[in-house]
Amino acid sequence: MIDLHMHSLFSDGELIPSELARRAAVAGYRAMAITDHADHSNFDFILSRVSKVCGKVSAAYGLFVLPGIEITHVPPRWISALAKEARKAGAKIIVVHGETLVEPVAEGTNLAAVQSDIDILAHPGLIDEDSVKLAAKAGIHLEISTRKGHSLGNGHVAVLARRHGAALVINTDTHSPGDLVSREFARRVARGAGMTEAETAKAFRNSEEILRRVTSTHAKAGKPRKRG
Image 1 (cartoon, rainbow, N blue to C red):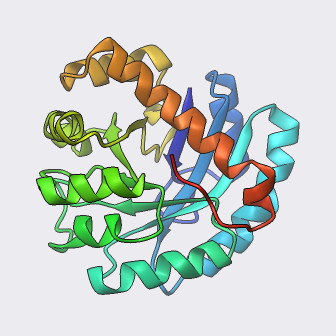
Image 2 (cartoon, rainbow, N blue to C red):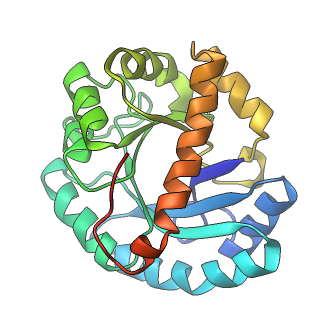
């Protein structure tokens, strides 16, 4: 299992990064990203703190742990600029908190996200077709979420991703130990969203490809990233 959307107590998660990584390793995860909720007030603080521990716990527990952020409830017009600042501050994975069905996310967030330099648009709810087309063109991945509430839009996301060739990933959006799931459970959530076995397997491979890209020599050297 690779999960590129998790939270520690640097936002609203329950665990410090080391315990989160340890529990993920014991649960069989091979890689993860700590992507705490961020806006302009805290993104640099989160990244400086989480980056300090990622290499240490990666070596100790035998899994890749990447520093990232989830841009959350930021007014749409500011998302692109914040994403650029976060890249410069060391974010390996940038997630945007999409227009989930269960939170009052500002209208236009999904569109602003797919027009920005990000990796994943999380739980985008009833995302419109034009935004999905832009995500496909930009190589931005749409999330199928295993988290309660956020998973309500999974079927809609899967249908439009299939229609317009957008890439999908499957994440847990972990906030507490009970949110960690097995690869088999994640597969079942994807199948419940109407994804085929082939589409589900491709979503898992997409996470592998993101991991490969961000851990490559070019990414580490800060050279321009190439999207698939």
